[in-house]
Image (cartoon, rainbow, N blue to C red; front, side, top):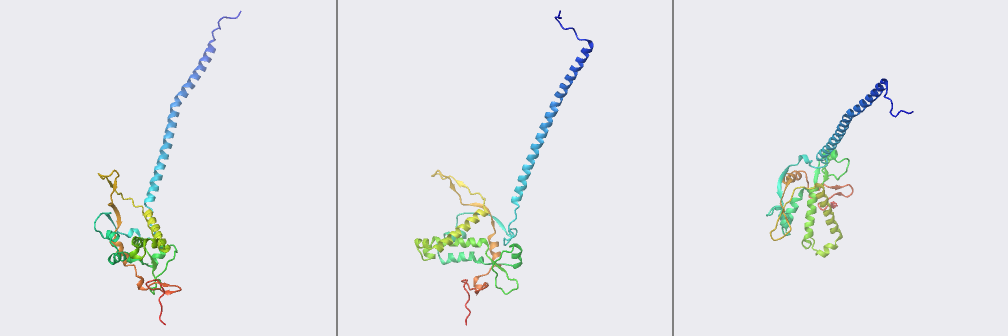
Length: 277
């Protein structure tokens, strides 16, 4: 007859079961004890990885930013930017300044003379040693001064830009400067090509220099739109210093210092000098 109840286990079976249960309980306790440690280790490792990546990211931008700010100017600049003198000044102010006179002055011999004086150092002499050490074998015409290693002939970009501004000023008064009407000037392909060249050159310079000085706005009580203000505080080259520096190293075409390899010495109009028979 089958027993209704199972018999009690023997003491030995009780010991084995107890031992087995204890081992299982200890294993479970060990696993539970490891969970916080493992979780903390994973969290710490993850935090360290994120921190390291953050440090690398910040360092990258600091280094790159420092590199951008310390990007050296081309050695071909003459004078080198480190040699220039600078001033902080406010430009764009109203008043009868000499710059305003050059722009708004009516066409006259006096205004033209002021412009020619401004661009007088257009033709600049660069010592051969200075030129050859910075221009990477790029050639340029040389002055015929009779020396064994004559100076090179260049134009500093600032004077080329001033020349372009003077030409654009002529464009505004074609009847005075070219004895032409607006319509006749528009049909002069050579002149218009020169004006476009100047516009392109000035645009390149504006983009290259990227002046970030701030210009403000004010509210007009009679109009809804804000009105721009002209004055702006800017870091500028000390023009008097640069002009005098260049004048000491420039020459005039009338000096007869240019000689073509084929056509010989050139006059002030850049035409071969006629040698009397």
